Image (cartoon, rainbow, N blue to C red; front, side, top):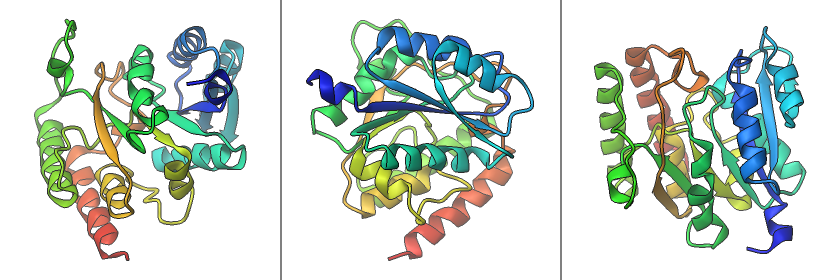
Length: 243
């Protein structure tokens, strides 16, 4: 991939009250991927998330009040679309997602073999030379992950091991679609995978390293698991009913 194309890659990080975690994430991305722009979407934080992100070298969009995880993500998609980026990476602002995995995640998209990649915490055994420990999650949350894995696998016709992963990379065509009004802004997980598949996008999972949320309060996992499962079912039904 030539340098000018690398310069048209943006990393978006939705963050709500992540002042304790955001700066090291931004610095690690800037150090390892100097040609990538980094945008933090400060989603109505009441702490110093904005100041710490700016100090670490990121650009920041500050929502005046919290739009939620999906709303913060779509803010990033709209920004990337308007500023004509070629590629986009998204990761959470709480330190769950290992930034050193960005290259593996974006490589299939930049090489043209996939339109969107999903970082899977459950595929680490398929990558040689890794000593990463297996990811552990609370029982109810794991049940939800397995359930939506089965649903996404059924409706896409391909194995989807980690449909709730917020660690993703995509090309311009994909994030342009997600910047529009069909994006399920409240609960963007398995329903987005199904939507993208139905729209003809090529989806690929990539092994990545993830850590448990440091404070168990990430934007992506803030909903109570049983309530989340119920609402996700509704969102998937709406997605399937759309033409």
